[in-house]
Image 1 (cartoon, rainbow over the protein chains, first blue to last red):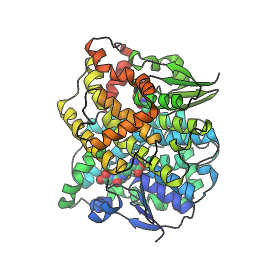
Image 2 (cartoon, rainbow over the protein chains, first blue to last red; image 1 turned 90 degrees about the horizontal axis):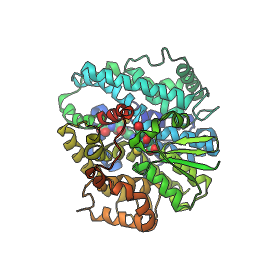
Image 3 (tube, chains in turn green, brown; image 1 turned 45 degrees about the vertical axis):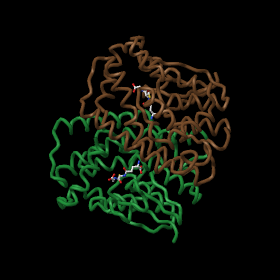
Image 4 (cartoon, chains in turn red, brown; image 1 turned 45 degrees about the horizontal axis):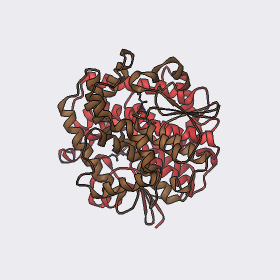
Length: 240
Length: 244
Ligand SMILES: N[C@@H](CCC(=O)N[C@@H](CS)C(=O)NCC(=O)O)C(=O)O
Ligand SMILES: N[C@@H](CCC(=O)N[C@@H](CS)C(=O)NCC(=O)O)C(=O)O
């Protein structure tokens, strides 16, 4: 058994891993774990990742979680083109800087937007107060501004002239609010142009293949009540 | 101008950077900015780091934020001893796995008690009791995972030697300890790990780096902490509202 990747393309870090592996023609077995069906809470998946989170990688006996760790593992193991994680000290530091920054900012904001705007009302049948939603949107706006001003500036990509892991992690986050129906690229021409560049660098077909699930998130049918019981407390813990 | 590090030793990621630079004898100019005095939101510093966060590194014209990025940059530029950030694929992956989890599950939870006990009262704000209780439960859950999943039966978090992961973790735990959390009580494996890390770092360096935070309750009781000026209240209140 070679490389196995446990993913659900509904999840933004899973999309980053998926696009990276496909784009670099890394051979892997896709193991889809459906989050909305609580498959990640199964005993079988707990054997792979006791923390019950996606994405997870299994390479023979070696199991690895956390998207950034997985992306770096694949980068080193498969000798992908240098631009993904440049050798040059300062460019590399820019990638590391973004990957560390995003956790408490874009990652947090984009996750909350999807849950507050779509998953709570449509999927879980729980209402979200307008104030809560407004606060989430305001926080996202602020992070987007920082992203443009500090990380993108007037560069083509975060680390300079070429796409890196940082851009991939960023774009897969930003497509979350898009899936939730927020036009975040409107009125942000620099951000929109960067998105175009990332899409072109990844390849249009692969980009949209990876984002098909999230673009349809608004249409997901209401959850089965027994599964809701299982998911709810974990979801709350994740977005509180 | 050589390497400059903008730090406040009351901040956990700053302590990690400080200890790393000192332990590895990396020559640097220490630029202390006191967060409680709002020195990080000055015009001058905003020009260096528009995010107004510490730690920040300045190396000639090159400016870098985020403790993890700074640690990796220093380890590579100064060729520090391999054990900190080994090139061996599996150990390095374990370090990043820990750091990813740390950013999601340790950082936001473990920072809260210092806010609840010391910083919130300092500006006359409040945190709902419900959040305080939830925070305690979250800390216990995270400590358990830290012990069971990340430490397991290893000497250190990612390998049999000290790595960047241990340093980042230690500084979060020290902060909890400093505000009166008995987190090593009843967790012998975690307590032994702490001892190993501190022994490796050396008592003198630990004393120097941890001194200010270990004194924080005493300072709060004696009212000798700086009172944050009104300009920093908005960012402080924002931080408080984000306590999960
Ligand atoms: N920091 C982790 C985040 C992992 C994570 O939170 N994954 C989510 C999906 S995006 C998950 O599996 N959630 C399920 C749960 O916690 O119940 C990474 O980047 O891999
Ligand atoms: N993820 C960052 C965290 C940086 C951070 O939040 N620093 C705090 C001190 S621990 C800060 O500068 N706070 C000031 C503020 O937000 O106003 C890192 O690890 O460097």
